[in-house]
Amino acid sequence: MTTKNYFPASEAQRFDAGGGLSRKVGAYNDNVMCVEVHFETGTVAARHHHPHEQITYVISGKFEFTVGDDTYVVTAGDSLYKQPNIEHGATCLEKGTLLDIFTPHREDFL
Image 1 (cartoon, rainbow, N blue to C red):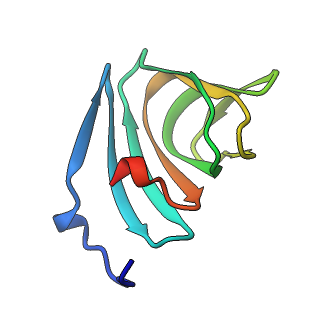
Image 2 (image 1 turned 90 degrees about the vertical axis):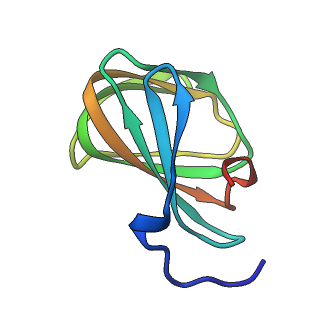
């Protein structure tokens, strides 16, 4: 992969993932990726797992996250860590935006 250092927002396309969820990929390289994720109220991100480490930072809104066996209600400024292969999911309680950081990058998002 060729290293790119600047990812202007004006060039990023918002991908409609369906069901009230959309995402926009920001900066990334082989080792790390940031993704802006937009949720409508009531949107459910089904429980899933993947081999990537993930940090989620809540930009706005209110969400109920389940990570492994624990459930958290989170709002702006809160963050979560998800280790590789842990099952996790979320329900959006109030419309909002998350910033997800993955390592390594999510090839399936490109």
